[in-house]
Amino acid sequence: MHIAFAASECVPFSKTGGLADVVGALPGALAALGHQVTVYVPRYRQTKLADAQKAVRSITIPFDDRYRFCSVLAGGNNSGVRYYFVEYPPFFDRDALYGTSAGDYSDNAERFALFSRAVLEASKILGVPQIFHCHDWQSALIPLLLRTQYAEDPAFREVGTVFTIHNMGYQGLFPPDILPLLTLPWDLFTIAKMEFFGQVNFLKGALAYSDFVTTVSKKYAQEIQTAEFGFGLEGVLRDRSATLAGILNGVDYKEWSPQTDKFIAANFSPSDLSGKAKCKQDLLSVFGMPNADTKIPVIGIVSRFAAQKGFDLIAQVMDRLAREELIMVVLGNGDKVYEEMFVRLSRQFPHKIALKIAYDNVIAHKIEAGSDMFLMPSRYEPCGLNQIYSLKYGTVPVVRATGGLDDTIEHWNSRTGKGTGFKFSDYTGEALLMTIREALRAFQDPTSWQALMRTGMMKDFSWNASAREYVKVYERVRQLQAAPLATI
Image (tube, rainbow, N blue to C red; front, side, top):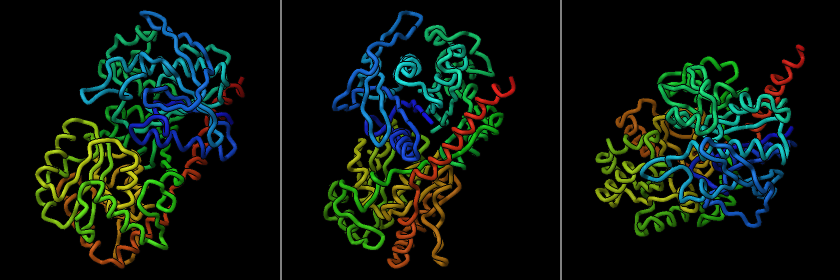
């Protein structure tokens, strides 16, 4: 089967979050199962290509104001996956992918409409897939275009679409006058299609027109059908429940394993944990605390700074957390309010919180390897990957029981010796504080703690099982595509 991925980011070429990790790993797992896989992403300023060749010299993209002309670069073949990059410097040669700390780029609708149309046009030259697998609002126009403006195109007659929601909190909302600018008809601006409280909603358009919808954990697939987590689209998702599935993200253990990690001070394994102590010392040095007592538990955070991540709970209880024997190391960037919050807390508690405002892959690996615990108090978390990385590194997760965090972490029971981490349900500072204190008490028993570490390290969340689940979805979509033909 030929599957074409369309997404706004993909490691190692571009990244702001977990979407990039998924698009970087799932195609390889599908190729390993014998499928032909193509990946389309924009060519950003941060995209480093060693020897890119022009695969398509010019593609004409219509806009209401004027035509725009983009090209497609071939990025080579890696692990059986072929990569293509849509190049249009006026839209993509920028410092960031989606916006700055001041807000989103004002022309994001145009940027990703161009990307979506370019993917469709390029595929007619480079190879039309049997399935377009699209990810988040940035590629949401692809299934919509296929069933509307491209509906009569014979090249796409037997093409199916799968759309994956990585985060319901980001939907691609724009004013109605964006439709004529993108040469989209006004009849899309209805409550059954793209209209959303007076705005145009790209994500909703994909939900209306995709053959099948997936999201990134079973729990999140249930949650997004409720008012609390559906961000206004819960009714649409309930209507789609027969063609909606949650498939847990896997992780790439070639990239995230303490036994082979090239970024950490020492490698270690479940049978030999001695290297973790060296990683902890190295981590404390990186964060400017080389003389800190290594017997004190270190809690790591690697995250995009956003409201969904639950950092307001930390602010609520930090004065009491600071009385505990712990050190918190924090790496991330994002919303200005949370950057400023962590700066304020690190100045107020300099011996308790060490902070680096950045995205740094090397330091992220060091935090996973050198921390004793990893904190994810998310308000909601579709899947989460860092808690899965943490398990592999013997870094015990402390999480809120939501979405993929709830699916992947089992609360530790010291009496039975079962469990992989610590969870709390109520979204309150008190619940977070109680759970961290429970983890700190457990840390005081080295024998029990090492058993907990090893239990997590033995878990397997590789992509193989998840890739097979996606193949089942693709096969179901192909059956849906064939069904109308069978009735003629």
